[in-house]
Image (tube, rainbow, N blue to C red; front, side):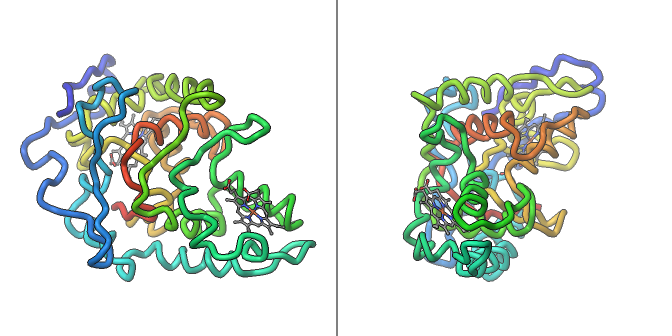
Length: 288
Ligand code: HEC
Ligand code: HEC
């Protein structure tokens, strides 16, 4: 289980007390994510070899660190507020737009077939050697194939679409490529994960590797996995993208975050995704 905090700075230590894990602080053991009473989604997996034991031998979904009510909302698509956005995304999928007067469906047909498995593999390197997240692919088609305006990375339209595409991979194992062309991006993402940011001089690893299972303020720290994004955040009463969550976490260290969609955050996304290799896609998840 979590190793003890390696917090170095007294400022950080004074600002955040990591409350050590008691039995009740550990990921829940007596609940199972069964969606709509039929689809069982495993919420833990053996840690990928590249982590070299850094989080012990198991990786856990963030779902296991949330309270009973929040967990329950993710078990039923009628209770999961993200499904309003999934429906809106599917409507957009079928809507003709832009100078080409084409819809996504005109070229890709059924979203259930053409987009199945994609979420689990992204971000990935394009034939041109760029690292692209799902949002890049969506906007590439909008601008270059439809003659439509690109959507903002964190716009509601984009989150509707990434949720609608993402749910087609629900239950499939995260399978991002980290070797070959992807390796240099992955290395940069890894460096970033272990870099201390902000006035508090804290890295992602300080919270999500060294202290998962512990409490910080009233929050039960998870491993910071991204297999459920985009997800519904009850606190914001809205959808949250992966990069939006990264921005929030960097801000919590009183650091200045990179922008959503930036090269840096796509590299970080690849690395964080790879920490969840083998965990099943839960898009769209629910968090408090
Ligand atoms: C004029 C045809 C056309 C339209 C319209 C179109 N696409 Fe595409 N899309 C393509 C082609 C061609 C590719 C690249 C080849 C491929 O992988 O299928 C692609 C690739 C993609 C990919 C990456 C797929 C992968 O497997 O790597 C995504 C995601 C995508 N499109 C989403 C969308 C969305 C969402 C819309 C509507 C907003 C849309 N596309 C509209 C033709 C289109
Ligand atoms: C000061 C501690 C702290 C730091 C540093 C931090 N986070 Fe977080 N993070 C949190 C808290 C608290 C939450 C909400 C509870 C949870 O899921 O762990 C959270 C949630 C997340 C989530 C959502 C997980 C889920 O399942 O909903 C992701 C992803 C994440 N963080 C990634 C990162 C990344 C990447 C970094 C480094 C850029 C980072 N965090 C740095 C405290 C931190």
